[in-house]
Image (cartoon, rainbow, N blue to C red):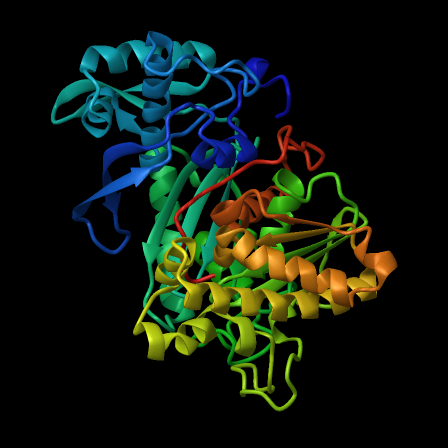
Length: 470
């Protein structure tokens, strides 16, 4: 990872994140057909999606001069990115399937696969489809794998990476509101097994799995440390229960802490020794980076920023206290405040309207920024960070949220503290948590195969679709 990207032969965590959102492949979107295999359903479902094209450092230097739009080199680079993205989405495809998924001709796919194989980007193996011989194409990988599982309020995201940090597959599935832990963990375990099978990998190659939960977690056993915050998961030792399903070490952490770790290793917190990471979406959380490392606290539940008291006489929070910051500035609270004037909306709707200049939506987000800024100012006075990184869905509204947040910190933090703080949006956006979860699994594994916590590529710029339930 780094400046010599043209000489690197691995698609790193940061390269993968950069590729999804920065457009350095000079392709903004790809229209493709996705076949998603559900763990509990042997049927194949087809979905249409417009996704950002994957850029990979092995094909060209990130700092290289972009090809002229519409040129032959630009088109070829676009086609390469489409093929790599399709392989990453499905975990592996035959060349015929790649032609169908990307819309490219069989001859083009064959030529590009040969190029990518020579470059070390993909690998091929003999296979059969419908009784015919075929070439099965997957991303090239180093020995050993880790899994990352990120649970949101209404979705689950599972990624598989090799021991060098290459994201090999990444799938997202919807979950019901207040889903139960056993059902979610069953689906995650089955999906991981399905991904391994896609790569013809033995279960022995899986080193470990990390799980991110949107609740305070005891690191020792994965128990939710504050009952009621994540309904359906109380009194479940997630580490032990998941380990029984996959027979591998499982490490559990809070989602906001994983977002902070992702930004620390591969995003906007790189290079800073002391950082406050704030995640703002349906829920509010934080991660504290002290001395260049994530601060866990006594039992692993540090960073419950959303449950700091904002109004002692305010609404009762799901945690049992009154007036938590989430009851003032959480996404659901903002939507409820706008219900009379705007009707029923989603968080994505509110963000879109605010971006289009809707004064009510802009006011709701700005008010949230001020409330979060006040709580952040108090925290900054306590541990004096040099950087504040703001991530999560609402951070994608940019200045609408960040300007009032920044102004409030500057006003209420001690002058000597405020003048040393650099407030920036997160650079990994919707991928921060899954990238951090994969990094956590790698760091807790015995074999890292060259993955280094000191690898710190340049800050990235992302514009993903909102997940709406962080």
